[in-house]
Length: 163
Image (cartoon, rainbow, N blue to C red):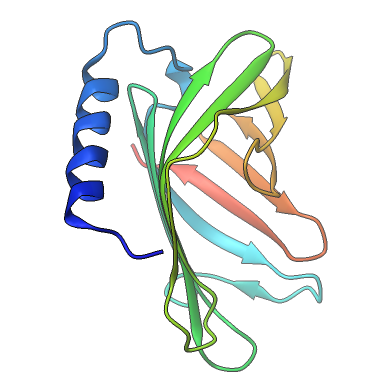
């Protein structure tokens, strides 16, 4: 799907409304900037920056994610997304606004604008929060300034909050 000028304007307005809304529910603990410190592959290989790069930031429930990694064929792949996250004691709800995925094949990136809100149950055990990402495969375990995202059989990503 090609993104038109109208879609960009609509997305900008939606993001401005959600980011400025005082009723916007989020988990205060995830607020801030996070960086990908390493990726472990199924064969035990560890990739670290600059081989693999990633950052996400959360501000008032608005999440922006960018990840860049090498493919086995020597090309690079990347994922960029913007979404709204809402938290309760028992679940997390994610509403995608924009996703751009380049699979490293040389074909143009795939674009997705908007989407339905998806929910996933949350388990809280003391300060540890775990949940299946509602719109993506990774299972996430967040503990203070550390987050581990496990995509079974593909990778385990290790994230740290920047202080």
